[in-house]
Length: 360
Ligand SMILES: *Cc1c(COP(=O)(O)O)cnc(C)c1O
Image 1: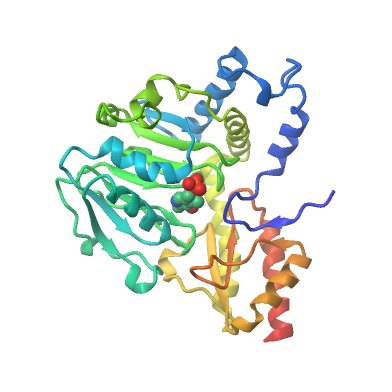
Image 2: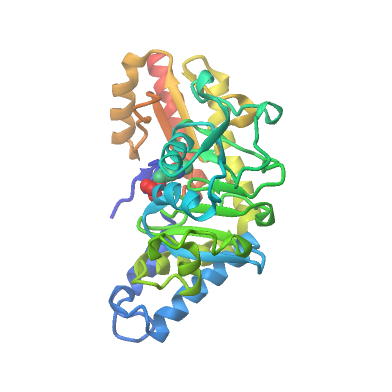
């Protein structure tokens, strides 16, 4: 068996020990003679698996007791609709910061159900920076302020939690959740599709402050109502059982390697290797403002775009896969999620140095 180095933006690389454990437990989980996939979600076994996954996430992120953890479906994209449905008061507006393709999509979706105020946009910089906080035109009566902590496509990341000015702060954390410690008490809602930094696609994690539950209008479909999901322990219908189980294994893996402080240290070291190379040469270039560069998704271009195809072909042949940039940005993108080992980034950097030597 040979595993490639997978730099995909999502679904992304998984920790090998998690895949191995899942493989070992595939046919017979815990001596029960069946796979987790085949268990009733109402069984004691599965309820235990889900409870352990939730406890694991709570410990890792330090989630306070007045927050609920929901295991939902529909991806971060469904949260673009659910957040306004659940939090926007009748007649009130919602504030959104526009820093890239994902916040843009969240804005478009929120506009369908009510007023949206874009407090600031980085569109003018082609989404290569974060508009300074003192330029944001926030509405103090907004139901919430929404931002995207890491723009997966543009490679722009917040390295601090922004000041929400007294309204609940809502964050799409899909591509950097669990990459570093975060003060959950600063947020009203945090949500993330699992397939970047948590586990398999099909699971969406929502962390919501309790006082924000129960605000959705009565006409809201049950599946889309945070309060319904919270009161049924995320089991209003059949939850994504397999994905929840795997996520629980990922949480155990993170705990065993030292938690989010250690993960943050590793992620900074990994991204540092690649940025060091990008900044040391004219051959490669990263378009993102220095202080706002993502440690998770690193877009870069070659000075000569005619070499792009050769770069990708040779990288692929060397076992470095999924490096093609998003079509809206072009060039390359290396996603360095938690499960990408340092040796993987070292291999990428060595390949890039060699490619430059041969083509520069
Ligand atoms: C991938 C991604 C999404 C979309 O996630 P889905 O789970 O596919 O709906 C939204 N926001 C960010 C920041 C992402 O990286």
